[in-house]
Length: 457
Ligand SMILES: Nc1nc2c(ncn2[C@@H]2O[C@H](COP(=O)(O)OP(=O)(O)OP(=O)(O)O)[C@@H](O)[C@H]2O)c(=O)[nH]1
Image (cartoon, rainbow, N blue to C red; front, side):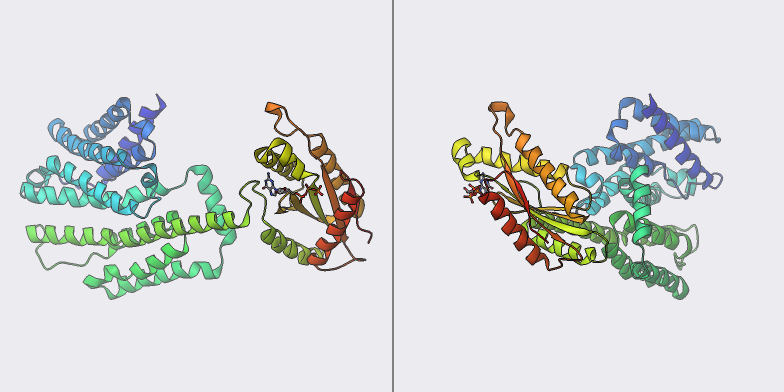
């Protein structure tokens, strides 16, 4: 029940907004209802049920009738509005979900094609606005309807499809402010300057002045921020910068020239939006590649190189803290015979079990990685020797008591642990610390395995 009520409320409010911009007896200048309804249904397809469409119809009709619309005019205007939205929505249903949130470089082009199809469909019925509202031909009526609808779709749909939900929006704004710096604000400042320069200099080419700055913004910020900046720039241009055309207002040539300028202004947004999607896809791919390069595919733990790199960074930061830093090496005992006895897959399962146990029992800020084969490394910053030894023993006992592969007759594994401390009395590089932990591990193995040995300071 809540869905249709929401749809009705949104359509009714959007229509009232449009009607407010409608001079008496003329066509509305701003009509966001169709693009908003299309965006709502594309974003939340579960709302596009029969009751949802019926609620939209009631919203259109009641908004018009309650503000003095005549039944016949209201009927064909509503038919034109709804027909355009239905066509747009049906085409969107044919596309993958990534295009519904503008997550692919082709999404903006699809958006343009769908907006064109939706606007053209509505214009077939909406062409009547020519003779009824403008004292012009149906052809001019169709052009005006088409241009107005396409403009609104290209302005409103990107925002509706990319705006994060309320929770994510608050987090995104918070993190943007926390990461904001003067350097990061340069592209948006240049955009502001180029818009001002365009407004100041004027002329037919001025609408393209902000495009380079918009492209810079699209390469510097995420897709949502680019959509907002593009929308703000385009709206500013549409409201304050459309140049005069050399035709008498009200003439056919004047109407066509104004529509052409309006369309050209909106279509300039295609490049920055496409660049933003390409850039955000590139960033996501890089992030995934970086994660794959830094983490072991079986256990998800850091690989040797990344572990050492992060440990060295931790060690250089640690020197400024009060307590020591512990480095431990954990090695599964007789792992070769586990593989031989239970099979390689069971050996892998043992590696995953040990990884999970270690990971779950470390503090936030501790570092953990797989050094190779059945050998793991742990760095605990800001600990004393006793505390580190206790933590190592606890890990050893937890691993000893856990069962691997319980479903088809499980088995147990043990680990030997070698540790070394870094502190005021025993400083050194991470390489030296790891070498001392390795010697302790060797001693633990030599002394019978399943035990912890810490190097003397
Ligand atoms: N299942 C599995 N086995 C691995 C993996 N990486 C290394 N191994 C095996 O781990 C075994 C390590 O054997 P060793 O170095 O002899 O050590 P160990 O048998 O644990 O003996 P100690 O360390 O002395 O207790 C080798 O048989 C490797 O093939 C892996 O990713 N999965």
